[in-house]
Length: 460
Image (tube, rainbow, N blue to C red; front, top):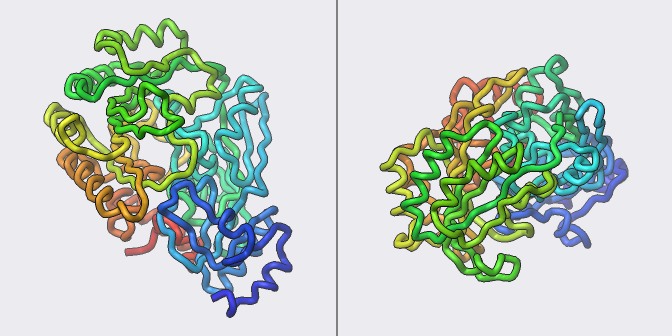
């Protein structure tokens, strides 16, 4: 395909580098966090300026190419081939305004890069469970913070301005009052209406959090789950929790007590006095001695250790759904699907508690479908393409087994490559009214559907 494109003309307009298949650096530039979802672009533009982004989009529009953007690379719904890929790492910077408790990020910073600079000002952002996730993509998908979301809502609720280059190559700023339709659609539809080059958002004067994990042997699962469900319903908004049912690998990097172990992992955080946070944990202190215990007062910048997500790229599959409730029958079924006698090979099956501030309406309308959703349920399997059929089969079994209590909605950042590939599937996830409203904005700013290497909003 590139032989038919005037790539020299594009390269002459760029400040940053351009890569074609076979060029040195091409593979590094297109790399994703999930090794099972490779991007195979015809052209990669390593944008160093907003002008590079604009030139690349106009070139793609003139040559009928789809445009993909790689940030942290965790969520790549469509690998495809032949697209123009934009990487924004060379634009990465941030500016912290401590007096306004605000930060402006440009390009593709990861949360792990931003957390320490914020901490130097006594501030904390609404980062997710993994510090390796890209800030911008996370925010555009709503952003679910294990520590702050139940008290402060979605991370995207605190966005104040977004700079985006749309399908016509024009740079626009979107706020609650300027290009308000763009501001609505960008917060929830991910990259469907353009390439976001900068975001400004609010942060919080928090230095420490009381939190970590308690891991119990998996034979306690049937006892653990109802205790956790009932306990979670009593927690104040300052507390967050989730549970992971895990088969951990016997590999270096996994703490010794957990290597090769089958466990149930309580994740917990509390923003407040350590003594108050510990008192809330009392029901689990009575459950017995955990296999491993990391609960302590920690710097907020270390909050990524609470979930202890994988730090390095790996091949994986995932699938998820929302859950509207967890009655006793659902917990019994979950034990059957994932418990000690299930034969389940999935590395992690988790339930994240939502609710509290996550149910509040934002100051400006957004495109998130999940307010009022009780839980996010997700399965995670590690394996390469040769294990795809087996692992995806297990993911479908576990997620499908919870279907009686499922809600079609789920967090945009949790929609896996295995789901919502058709307009009707995505419409079911967002609901018809919200879906149609997003499509109307997309058709205005991206009428040629350049930005389609994603969970794509199109008129059905």
